[in-house]
Length: 545
Image (cartoon, rainbow, N blue to C red; front, side):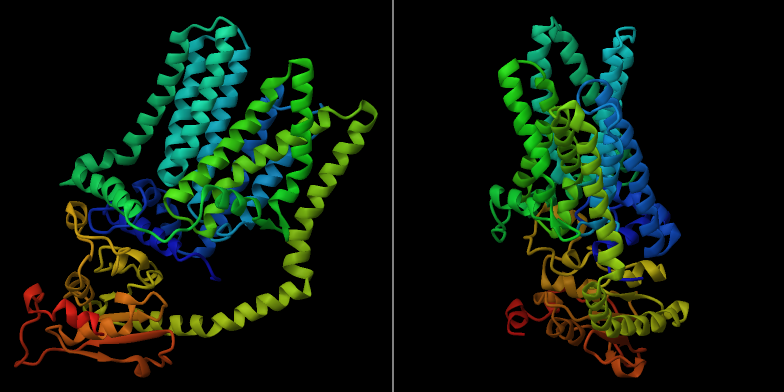
């Protein structure tokens, strides 16, 4: 199976729940919009991380081909500079595939891949619209059809990763402003510009209907989707969070991400030289300015990402959202640099660029992954460090799988891989370790009550010892709080059922996983039912643990 991001377990679980007819926010919660659940249904049906990785790799390869066609179309329309024999589209495809697979979270098959695919599909639609606009025989209505499609894909990208809302707004506003200014010079009517904006908005509305429409047919669906997709996320972002950095900090962070030991800013040196040289040429000749529009939009996109990170949250795999703008910046800059070379040197320069990129790709895939002794040593060290954990996980899984149907129920609040692999529901509303027992320290509100999130200690205990759970799987983490073993033992001690630790009996060391089993009730035992909150230990008692 290998290592992968723990978020993937949540997405697999949600995809499996949808095959059982359960929409996100109705029984369970995660801080994603419903489209993520839809997208992971194929992977959940395939049933393995390896299959999911292969699916995502094929998706990235197909997306790279679409990007190559889009770059070629933009080159023919005069929006990207490239020599006729320069394979710029294939450089774009190779860069996209390389960045997609080798940045943090790439091999895990994270949701950013889907967002990037939707962005590339939107770019493809816009490139077709620009090509049709250049063909004066094309009716304006046909061109607006591509804008509707572009708006549809852009909304889906933002629905997968709401962090994209800010960069997409910035780039859309800048693009429309350029369209307005250039259109006024060329006699473009204002109503035509308005119709183009409405066409993209209409496409976005279609995307919203696809994403949220199913909730119209679910009891209490509209209220739940508002609570889960909007209200809780606003409360989460608005609470006091640890200062993670400024916009400039995140711009720098995105510039130092590495592939094959080479940071992205190094790959940007030649393209930036091309952009700087073309700016000087535009100032001197007053023409060719529109070749700078795509790099400008890509830069604004990166700025928007940094702004969104500053005001929300940031983890390393978020850098995957910078794959497309970096690819477009690099290929645009290379094209501009190539266009400024003397004709006799153009072919040699182009071949040199392709050679450099090819060497980087070969070094990353072959040398760094297979032949490098240091890489091999690091892999061995990582494997040795995770071998014990994998062995313990297998013991836990085998024990749970061997239970009879009436004893199959369990909860594993720190490791949801067991739930999706064994096709067993979870009693916690939150189905990610960060949301299962202590959802980011949120306070009680209309939204948390509507969703049923475990805000109080009593609610967390009730979800842990729910009547359907025969076993509790407790994984050791450094989260503390309600994820500490002391909190679990408090919940078990105040439960109406009798619980016994079976860690040693299963063969576990107890360093990573511990198992607790509900014991059969005797005739003298009190019937098992949820304990009223007022009967539980006081909050101060919990705090003393």
